[in-house]
Length: 248
Length: 79
Image (cartoon, rainbow over the protein chains, first blue to last red):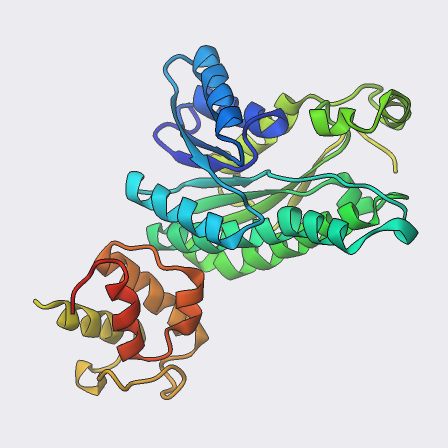
């Protein structure tokens, strides 16, 4: 198993890419800590994980990545229960699209606080902890929208492009401590967030994918597994697209 | 070894300086050995020695050895 006895924290793990990643990591022997903002959703996700992987070692942590105090409390609680942290998957994210002329300050705040600030807050604690242990892998979820941009998604694109810059910088900063930092840039993945755009836009997006289909969360999870495991022991500062040849 | 001695040793080890140079008044950036890079190594050393995880705000606020004592004390470590 690729993650035997590794401890992995996954943010936004109650559904979609986060839940798929938690499931795959558990299947690969990791002790998985799932986190999210809703206790009810966390319990539901935990039950699904245990059903899928009966031998899984799963714990749940209430965490709102947009709030620095919440991040601090979650990491300090995790520090007390786990001796180490081997992988962080910063997956929690929000989508709130609008044409630039209609973007509100509240939208900007909400999207950047979760998608960008949250990545920084979590990396601050995880990076320090991993550096002390002399190894670790931080995986940040960016987006093809962050690499290519898209009409009507300036705010989301900005928040995710920032994640790529943060990833490259952290990779350089933490490499001497043997902590690797990489990003994944999913294309159009079949999640609740993707479905929220409505059926017409959904079909149009699928049409822009050269492979002719929407991606599955499990296909992103496999790349997260590669980055969390020693298979990628010499990979850092990279952004890996998982997009089926999507054109934007 | 007292907790003060542990803390002083952590500073000496992380900053690569003689323990005799350390006092509660020793301040961040007051000596060449305590720069921002060394500060993060110092934080790691203190966290390891006392088995704590410091708040990010406290890392920024840790401006002297005396201040470090106050911060570590917040984690139930008596000085």
